Amino acid sequence: MPGNPLLKQLGSIAAATCIDQAWDIATAHFAALGFSRANYGFTRFRHLRTIGYPDDALFLSTCDSAYAQRYFDIGAWARSPMFRWAEQNTGLSTWKWVHDAYSAGKLPADQMETVRANLAAGIRAGISVSFPDASVRAKGALGLIADPGLSVGDVEAIFAERQDEIAAVANMMHLRIVQLPQLSRARALSPRQREALEWVADGKTTQDVALLMGVSAAMVEKHLRLARDALAVETTAHAVAKGALLNMIFQHAPEHMAQAAR
Image 1 (cartoon, rainbow, N blue to C red):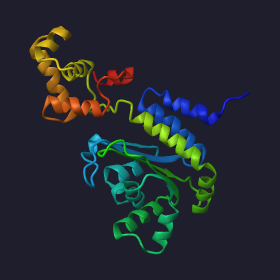
Image 2: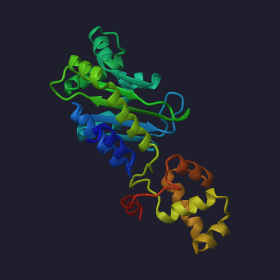
Image 3: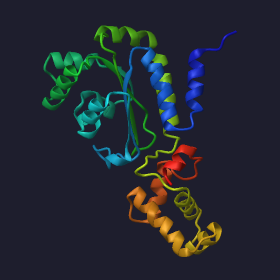
Image 4: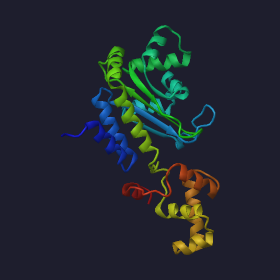
């Protein structure tokens, strides 16, 4: 008896060893459903109505670079009615309500402008997924943009038939991503910096860490200073906390990430 393709997809996402791998598997599945463009954002440092320091948030997109720059770098996401919905809700929603509110002129001015820009870019319909909060400071959301030629009505039909499937793949992707190291070339820790932080997290003193790592106390201090710089924090205690939140310590870092950190 052949296996269930959806279960195989979920298993592949659950077994992903890096964020890009989980993202690629999930977005390939969404593309097959008519959503080849997708945007994902996740932060562990939300504060009040902000996402915290933007460089600490994770943004992923399958859109072209021009759109990604406008959406992420210039901050169009913050003026999007879909983002506002995701801030206040959990679950899935099509964008039909955005279409209806825009047509009736009932959106705030900044959101009207964002919808106009989306329409000019050929973005007319889609689906939002707002994930359950992992903590009071965490928030993640996914936007699936309907392919050109798919109308609001088409998306409603896809959603009615495949809602559970979309939810399962999206949630598995999100759960796997938040378990994996959130690394970038600009903020990666070297293996020695990571090791030093891990020993400090275990309650070791600088002298203890020097003995355990087989280096001088001055070298341990250098590793910790560079780790603080990489994590953009002022204290080693903060570096340990932030490194743990970002899954950058006590993790099996994929080899290509370890190489990028050297």
